[in-house]
Length: 355
Length: 232
Image (cartoon, rainbow over all chains, first blue to last red):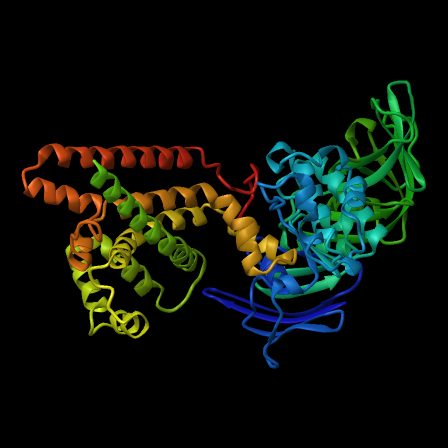
């Protein structure tokens, strides 16, 4: 549990936020310049706030009143930066071991080589950072941060410099890291897609102030629809490849199955599935005689609408975000708790390797 | 010929001593100027750079005053050694150090500035203190520029004349360096002997500058990888 009351004064900018982060994955979301990274740097200790107090698991790491300011190397916080910030003169193994070597032997809870294995880096241990792809670099950065057995993992836009296929893969790794090691994470991002996909809670920052704290989809889609600053939303889900037949491949996602274009993958392979919210059609009744291969029955769990733009969240066993227009919403009479059908073509689904 | 060798040897000794002073001092000053924000930073920059803008004779004269019986260095050395440093090879080395310091600081500063500060922040976050971060991250990434700076400072110290002759004189066997020996020989009309030492200076200078340039040309950009899109 992290509690903070941070004030940071900069010319033309004031960050002034009070709040707390739980033990799950909390997203800190907001437009560029909202103060997301500044808040993270204050918690990590690389920036000293102008005032306030920060506590991590009951330990005060900063307090203006009591004149406490613990230096960053003593805070037990792992940070993953946007482009990895790997040490270019050290190979992957030495990067991962850098922080691990600095902690006392009896405090080493995670083994660097096991972490490398967990993050699929075993083959890359002798490479230098400039011989890695963007996704591989981020995995090294995650392993390097975890190897210090941190009490808290801070992720500062870790996917911003990656393409969409790699994003899904890293998100998948991060979810696995969280369930495996139960380390609290704070995930800074300005991508609603990422935040909704990974976080259990979300905090919305705007102009240095806290605007809300809620379930990610509720907070962010609601705020984004209201503010009009959302263009598109991708549903990103983890799946497992099933059968392939008739130029189609099924992918199992939790309790449901969907059809995708034929994939050159073996049954049982882990994949990440991406489906645009605007690629899904909503029907109030069971449709018949459709060319679309995917028809999923579910319940509307939330609706956000403003100025003609509408997002709904539909629970079909997994939660999907669907984009539609205000007129369609009214015509179909869609409201929370209605039964609806999701319809999308197998070709609308993008399937990526999970690593 | 024998005297040539001892002159070159004394010059090397003085330049090495000067380098031993400028290496740690220059590193500290360069690090302060590049990485730290503090009151008096501007003043420090000006003071360290001043020898670049002054006639070396003036630097030598100021140093002579400091190492003399009225200066604080002179009084300190008198109480320790029983004599001032004026007209000793140590005074010559101090003069060479002061004159070469601005070049060393500039070279080190450029080398340190080439290291992405976020790598240092990352190292701190991983548990490394500031000294360890400097030694394991900053220095290894900046080492080419640092060696280049050391070389540049060393050749500048070797060729120092104006400040040295004021503060250390031109005493054969004691404070006579290559430049001051050349000056003596030219004054005496001994052109062959002057040319011999001039040639030595040229050879040393060419070698040092060649290595200096090679180091800087091969210096890898110590950035954080290739993807810079979206960075703010």
